[in-house]
Image 1 (cartoon, rainbow, N blue to C red):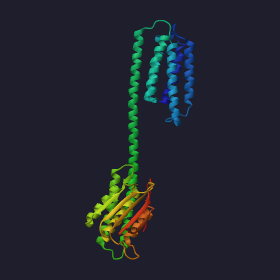
Image 2 (image 1 turned 180 degrees about the vertical axis):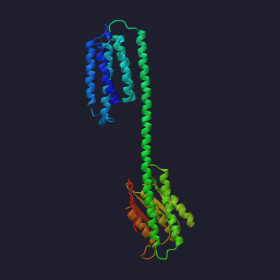
Image 3 (image 1 turned 135 degrees about the vertical axis):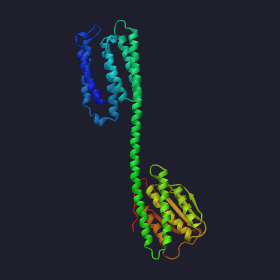
Image 4 (image 1 turned 90 degrees about the vertical axis):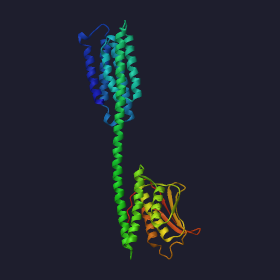
Length: 372
């Protein structure tokens, strides 16, 4: 539109200048000197505007200001031409019909309305300023046509704005979908690798019971699936942890014939941290149900500063015996330290065995891989 406006500006200036020298276009109300001066000024201004770096400016506040000043100047020049051309007897008012599409394409709706009012008021003032009577009917018809053209311009501007906004939203949606698909592929790849590494750990155990390995692997896969289900139901790649923990506790408890109570705050994590935390919760709940006693409780808490989370699993048992904590707790410690960059503590607390993990809450997702 800027290029078109520049070309039309030069063409219009040439046509107006030609009108001052062609004898059959002369009449007694026409002021040739002012018309030629306005045409030369318009051509000079057009030349200056052509030198501006529009490609770099477009979309900035500076460009918007220049476009508004340009539009206002063009309306003023056309109004001056109408007056110098003889008011109602001048055909220069037709130039307004070139200005209106320019306003519709470059100006916000509110500024358009102001400039449209400027056009109508300017034409009427130019006609009334010329000495002698003016045919009221002709002036009213021209004003009506100009007003209708302004209304059409405003309508088309709104339609173009809605179309442009809808296209921008569609492009942004498509971009987000591509990013989410890429993120999902990356997360699935890492989670499959994580499950494979956990299977290798189980396979390396001496005298491993195949049925137990299958059961524990199923539990871990269900934990990862719970995170993916939550991700599919939420936006921005964030996961509400408590529903995930409740689902894991329900699945494990149902499989082992026990009830697990979940309490505490809800914590929102990125997808990667939620996956690691879900696996940790699964391991701790399975250990508590298999080796602990009494009620098993999972507690979630958000740190006082809101920058770290806490997860605790406790039962009524005495905890592991001997110096070896067992594969379950060793795996949990690795998951916490390598995957969540957190810490794990365990011990008796008020007659109940308690395992607690603390880890920072990261806004951006980082993909940590499980190591053999």
